[in-house]
Length: 154
Image (cartoon, rainbow, N blue to C red; front, side):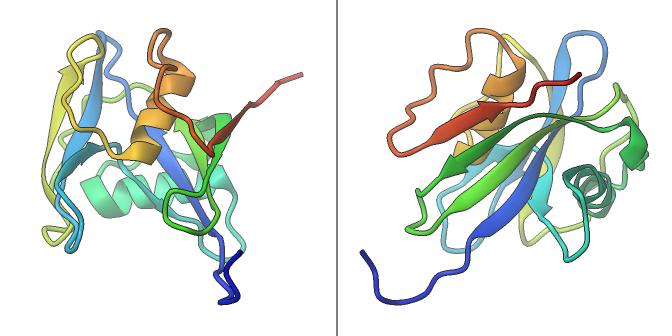
């Protein structure tokens, strides 16, 4: 076990379906990491719910504005891939075909909509987990050291 304290990362991955079998995915180009494909998403700010994080991050990263009240948490995923705990909420947004723009060119090379049965690879690990919460058949992501918790609604 590490003796260096490492703060856990808390975030949300946002599934933005189109309503016609496609989903919004970006070309992730974060410095120091290999390029991957990723859902919109990001870290929780102090005082935010996962739904509020999803609405804020979606607007910041893509310019698409959808209300937090219409976001729905499907599951949470805990992984330790980075050597510290990372908790990612899988958040389903309402369907949207609004134009997605690149607002963070240092982290994203472009947004596209892909058919759910033709998703690009390689997928950013948390995004793969989030998509597996939503799409049947995508829950076969390697999960060594990862724990997934579906949210039960009453």
